[in-house]
Image 1 (cartoon, helix red, strand yellow):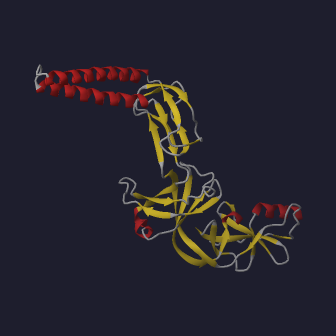
Image 2 (cartoon, one colour; image 1 turned 90 degrees about the vertical axis):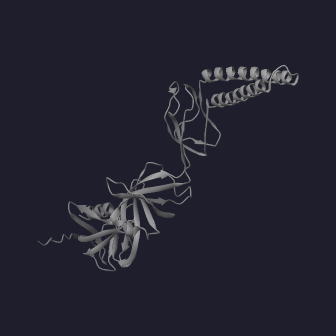
Length: 327
């Protein structure tokens, strides 16, 4: 069944705001890619958890705030830990005094060396217990483990913290990567891939990869393997990109010369794809195309419907306005 070719020719109206943007299509070298959906992750991320029980008394940061290593983030009510530390300090003082007294008595031959050994063991145990309880008391001060940005706050003022309960997640924004799950039948091909381009559809942004790593693991249920694509570390390039964001990774598997049009220039009506073509006399024609796969960065291969050297409107909305204005 042949598909009819839809052509609409009208004189080009002069747009008041600005001229109609166009591009001359020519065969040119493009990257052949294999796309896969991915998820943005932080290469350095830490989830800070409580190490003692206590109510959250103070919260000094919120999600999105930049912090430095060692900065106080939260403070917990550690009265129970403080009391335990005070008790351990008292036991230490008593054990120390007993050890020193036993030393003198052994020197005077009033006690046996075995008594001195026991006093020394009690003193060492008390010292260790004092150190452990002092460290526990310090855990009431929740500090930043790395320089970075607070990605999420898991506890609020007044919440009850328990050992192991997450309180905050901090990530370093200068190191991000996209992790994509790739079918196992493509792994042999991807092991030779050294280049990829990462697309962020919501941001309209493309980034070149810094490196591509195929991890030596596979999911037994889905039969896919994770592939990590490190993003460039420049802050301006990573603006607006955060962990958890969706991305589409285009692995470059080869190169070829193809005739393409920008993806944004294509008008789709159901299964019909077309572009606005501008003739030499300024007339616009909405021409149906037969398209291939997406290639390069935001381009689509043209299989039929266009010839090299023709001029295509890159903004179909403005082209449509121009046609309506010409009526």
